[in-house]
Length: 196
View 1 (tube, rainbow, N blue to C red):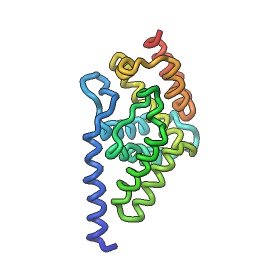
View 2: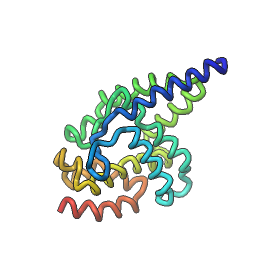
View 3: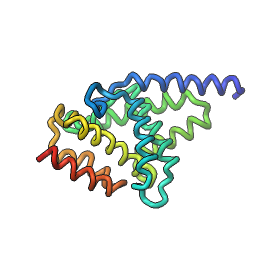
């Protein structure tokens, strides 16, 4: 691949990634004024990783976590945001959604030069599998940020989707506790006030 072709591929990917700013999420900004977009969410999660790095298990590579988080929602360019509390939480992890996200990852990462495509896709796959310590922590942070937004906005999507404390625990709390148990303990104290 020539230098010119490599740069053209890199910019094609970057220009496509700009579309993530147009994907609206169910979660609002913490002030409740409007829905956040997926680009804002991804940026905010990378900041969460930097600030909350001390909550990670020993050996977690925060640099890798940040790389995963900045890439993790690019598939929403094609698939859109699938809220975890929508349709009883089933749509979020349905086989149809997973297949659509896999196709989106193929297309979007396929815009890159092969070396970057392979590296980025491997990070995205690792995040999705949530089996390595880095991915488990990244996935935990991905669940923490919307909880904070809902707490700060007076219930946000918990009201929209009539979420119960039990649903929050099953769909969100378990995943946060897996990678950041102290964070879930701290958040749980605050969510109890909302659900009581």
